[in-house]
Length: 482
Image (tube, rainbow, N blue to C red; front, side):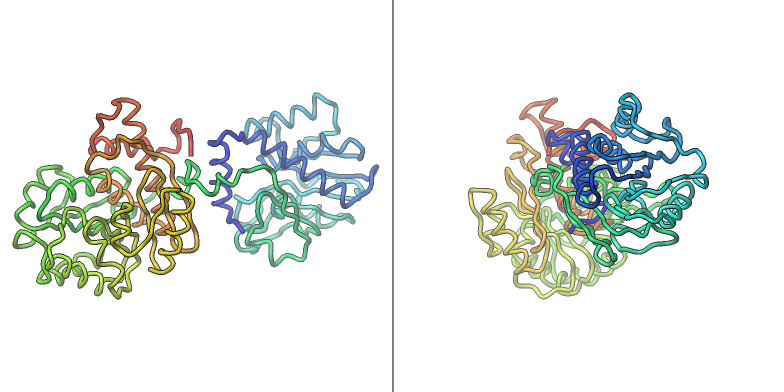
């Protein structure tokens, strides 16, 4: 089962792996044609009602595989408004090969004739809400036809994730959907066929550029809507919390507050005028600070806990007390990690250990990344929290879902890159599901490291990563690989 947003991510990841969408469209069209052949005999009349997106493009391809049928393709709207190059190419191929391909300029005048089968290829899984014309009128015409109806991917007007319809929707008899079943299809009174179109398993297993599709910013948003994050760190060290805070902002959060002991507060302020810094008395985090920390954390979207705190007994006791009293979202890193397995907390945690820290927490590891992924999934299930285990292959798991990120390079063994990762994860966890946040953070942090290495080789430093995060997370840029 796969949601519409996840399906879009997997499509994009497949392309990054070298399987172009044009190839997937060819496979999808072939799958539609196979389903048509299973429903009606050679020589039958088939009317295809196609939209101007890739769902329609799939159906244009299908028409080429149905030479033994009397096929008519009805395009809803002007050909110049077809939204993707690959769909437009397949529409033009029909005209060049003299298929019966008609342009429907007025959907109320759509004439389907008396077909044996109607193929609904108007809208795909990514479209929600009530149908509007021309699709609404076309859906009524399809429903009025005395014909078997086959929907492509999802019936037009039906939400692929919920099965709900906000208005008129195509009443289909059969659905051919691609790659995996969709949540909204289960409640339909229709036969559903899931077609394998050649998307590699790696497109789901490995985090890729498609996973960035969760990062949607409302153009009407205000300060704080995109994440208000609290970093709790420092004492023995000042650079670690500053790196995390810098990464929080570079990863797109609106605000970052840093709470740190007074002995490093001025140093942290000196790293950037963009940080809001609050001092705690003394030179390390202590249980006496917990009431203040919980008060400051209460209004935040996420907390990053651990960078530069050190492992003093009273500091770890303070971490334990904070987590015991906190019920929000926290990214736990560095020395604070060792407290997690023994603490009773209502918080939602994302833990970011390297393999040595994972073993200190009680988890197991392995040299082979596939074996390690299984062990991480088991330990995440035991903890009931999300793990992002750092390595040449980062493994992300919430105990049910597990992904692997392959971005990054050997230059990232330099100190501070983990602090950057914690900050990125905190920024994303402020607005996203923890597992999705950790997955995207791992990929983006590694990708930023790769961008720096392309320019500077292995002489990179952690601040370089933070500054390249906007480029690494820019979906409009040229980003390759998964």
